[in-house]
Amino acid sequence: MKLFCPSALTEEFNIIDGCSFNFNYPSIANDGQNNSHITNAIFRGKNYLNHLLNDATSNDLIYISNCILEGNDDACNPNEIVVNGQTQFCVEVAGIVGLNHGEFKLGRKPSGASDGYAKIEFKQGSLFTIYAKEDIEINENAAIIIDDSASLNCVKKDAVVAASSDFVNFNLKGKFIAKNNSFIQKQNGYISSNNSSNSLLFISSTCNFSNTTLSNNWGGGFVPNWKGNYPAPISVGQSVPCITGGHTSFASDPQCSAAFSNISTNGSFNILYNLIPNDSQFDFTFQPEGGALNYNCILDGASVVNGGTFTINAGAHALLVTDDNGCSSDFYFNTNGSLTIGCQERMPIGDNPTP
Image (tube, rainbow, N blue to C red; front, top):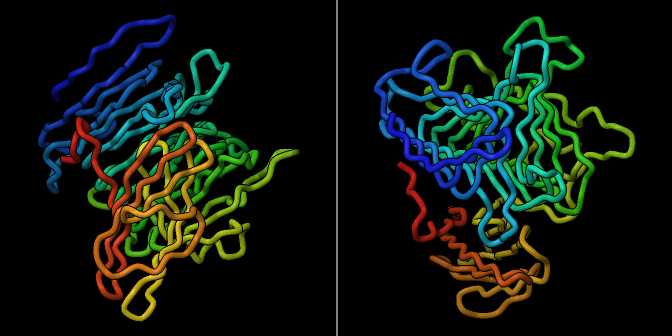
């Protein structure tokens, strides 16, 4: 393993700021060997966990406990953790398993006085594992994103854990996004929410569609029972966030007023969109989400009104979205006859490419 990480110590937390963890050990990581641990840490800036080999005989495992992905004040540059390749990012209970609750907070400032912009994104081949009795706090300007061929698994680690608390709790105030061909096993987890104006629960219609177990090397008997306990046990004054994405398993649950089948993410922005064939053309409908309201949208060089439907020709197209703070993001999408290919986000200059 190679570790490049400028860090400092403040109060009781280690600061991890702009780090790249590059793993290249040619073996299978597990609880007993070839794993790493990060405890009591605050992540800032853009941080990458990269597995460089990605063959059938290697993966990496990194445990975190009692950590914060701090929110940035700058909406144009959210603090990020990006997990690339066959890396398992595992949130575990701090202390003695079976006795204590753990937390992983996204977007929270250490002072707790305010929230900022943050996201954690799991790229192709990676696995997000969360043990029971963990609280995953997704604050209003934060997001968890499970990409194409990435996986999420909520698991029990200790049979001693009491049944009443034997769950992973996603406290959703921000965004939970499962993209096309992602895989989620959430049998041991539930989602609760205060249904804030910023909450978004997007489950693609193809999530778990082509998989019978966790993607790539993360098999071993898990089954796609990911709906779990949704709608969740709801506290007084709470309500379930609306759902979009078009997955049939959620047809009887609260749907968002505008139904979208696709999503693209870039920085603090999300673009919800539909592309519907119309003879030799396509009807394109989109809705920006994230950043600050009052969006300025330019489609193929022409100003367009957010929320409208636009007839476009087959081929490549570009959408530029600028919010009220002046933050801009480019989104690219392509059509190919009756085949719809989702938006392709541009990799900003300076970002690490996916290995």
